[in-house]
Image 1 (cartoon, one colour):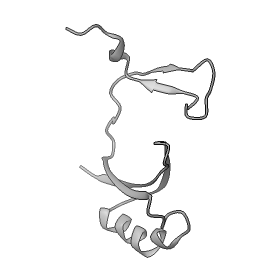
Image 2 (tube, helix red, strand yellow):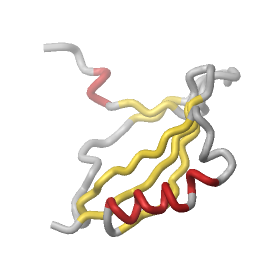
Image 3 (cartoon, helix red, strand yellow):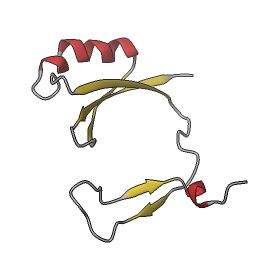
Image 4 (cartoon, one colour):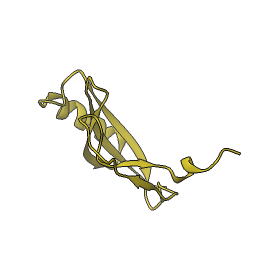
Length: 96
């Protein structure tokens, strides 16, 4: 099966929030690693110590999300809440 390699960068903030950036989709892990070393580790923001690069492998022509989802919107947004919270619908089912 063929795969693609998705390169993300996550910046971690002191308040526990993360800022995720999709950088690119590559045909090999090695190419994604070369992009990190040859380009992104040299750019402002990406070179900060409180961030990390993540490479995830995804097989193509497959579903990677198998279930539905529920979205709840908070009544009032505070500085540390996101506007939409996503959860698995099975979280609302009683334990067996």
